[in-house]
Amino acid sequence: MMKRMVLGLISGVLLLGLSGMASAKDLSTTGLEEAFVDGVANCGPSSTIAGALGKSKDPGVQSALRNALIVEAADDAAGIGGGSKSHSDCIQKELTSRGYTPEELSALPYCVMNDWPTPFTSLGVCVRNHAKLEAGLNKK
Image (cartoon, rainbow, N blue to C red; front, side, top):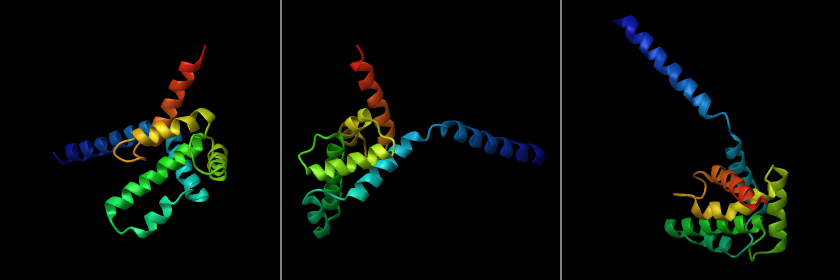
């Protein structure tokens, strides 16, 4: 009885380990998320939202302002924001140097706004899939 239990436990661990390895074969979408976070961190915020974020002690307000900064950075990365040109150039340079394509940059605003429950739940997956969809739709 003990041998069966040990064998069952070992089999379960192996099964879980192998399934984890199979699902982790494409980590490129995680790299997209990390590149976006790094780009925002390296270029900093471009508006007065950052000043308000630093002054507020309300967690709900801080969360809303943080999300607004993320949305603003995604717009700047796609070149559609009304922010400063230097901030847009900085974020675009950071992201393209980390492997973002122009199609992926243009998908960022959509994905940041529609990623639920937070802007980073599956940002890399959304960006990759949305960019492929747009590329397919734009083929003639």
